[in-house]
Length: 254
Image (cartoon, rainbow, N blue to C red; front, side, top):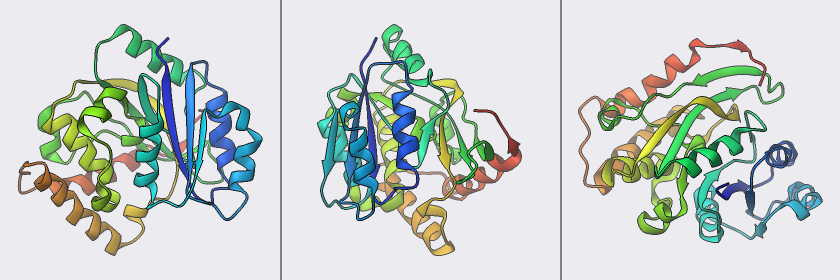
């Protein structure tokens, strides 16, 4: 099996970190779990240390936010393939990472991604939004598409060669990374048609109109710094695509 490194950035997540840790522990795969704590002031670190024997590494120091923490985790990773699991999230199945490891074992592809569901913060069986992705095509970026970044796994050499997250892009740092890796440098990728990650509702980029406008500005900047030019409608389509993700609501056994 291919060794996977999973990075978890965390700050004051005492209500959810246990579920994240147990999701990792339930996986039937060779997983290096690296936790990057931004010096939590609640009981987060105490809970993490309950599972200390299972964590490959715990970094606890002040950072410049989620993407800085992710960069630290990527730099510390020793696995063949790197993925992300945020402190509020969990994998859809205990077999998720085994299937991803098997995929990379049998394929020479540089990366993969799948589907993502947003679930109720308290009742995680209730699906609020279903981000169903699609087969990768370069042209889709020009129509507001991007893969769900929390489901994205890439070989470690990809980050070593092309770099991690750009801290100057705010909440658009993941979008810029996808543009850089998949559109600018054309690393290979494959869509896995299954739910990979479950994410509790809430997100900084959508928290207010001001944040959405700021994210849109940074989305445009992400194209520019990569020497890419979007279509006139590209950036307007990106948030509009989210509307259709609410078409599937209700209850789902995960």
